Image 1 (cartoon, one colour):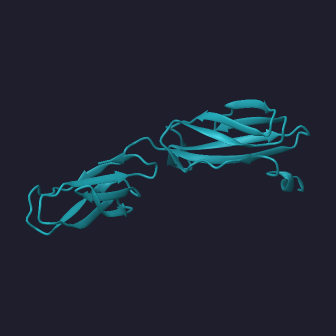
Image 2 (cartoon, rainbow, N blue to C red; image 1 turned 135 degrees about the vertical axis):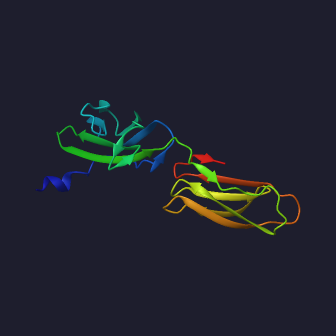
Length: 178
């Protein structure tokens, strides 16, 4: 009906980061002054926040469920914000984020501690989609995203003198392992 055109017209919710490494997020946005505001988390029928917004802006800290599974994705949380203006018009919006507090796995295949080769092959396993960066003497030599099967390998050029190798894997949430 024509009500649909009105929906979404007064409630504005700021987007959440796609990933978070904390168990809470700040839900911020605006609605009409003196509107009712309800915030729901995932499938919980009880509102986490229930209040009247006197000004037009709101900012609410919502504790996430890091064990949640939404759309088949572990850690995914959906937050539904509903607002009723003083004329009892309803508006709602849903935002989502994925809680990821785990460091990505990083397993390296054997690398010789001593080599007189000019290059070295570094291979291993990490989290799919994680970014692996390889440093030689603290200088970044190569960075790439881990393939869908979780494996990676890279050939790194070495100089002649002693080299220190550091390999860092960082997932989309920013957790890292080296």
